[in-house]
Image (tube, rainbow, N blue to C red; front, side, top):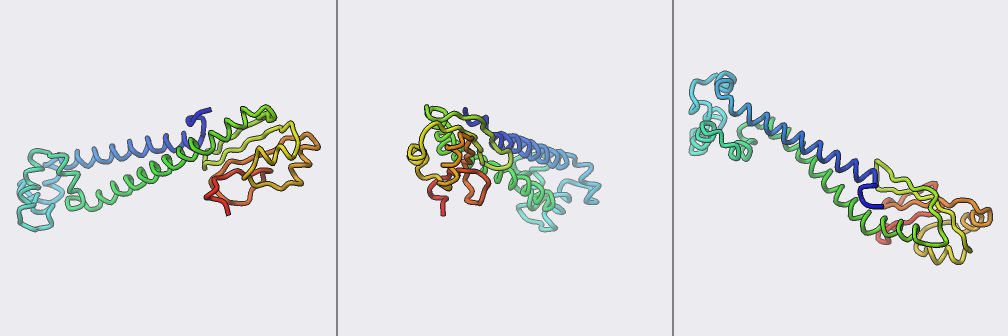
Length: 208
């Protein structure tokens, strides 16, 4: 198993790609509007690029107005994007909102990838490689980093306690599962919350 098999990670990566494309599209539409001088003349009821620059600078006839005029004339995309807050405040808010979502998704994807690589995957590999365990089913959530594993455990409760040292479970429940030779459900999670599974495995610094 590798990182790409976790549904939540895949969903985050897909969402990030979509938001980044949306951001690029919004930027391009803004630049296209700023490049259509005749339409801008009409929108701001002006006749020259100098007048347009003055209007975009909110009537301040200063050096920055000259810089705006130069950028409009040469369609300096870097300048137009860097100064969108002044040139088009409402557009700046739209771009900031999309950028904020992209940053949030990227941060969550990075955090989740770290959890999977450093915690969940090693545990899953140990389960798969343990001769006393047979993994019956493995399900990864699409909405959070939880992974649910159903196992059959072919040994004693003492061995179980050793294999699952640090995990949270009710001993009587596990002993009954072993006695009845029934599957044991296990959740690998970052979230310390009540759940329906027999065993909860989570990073030590998240417990309690």
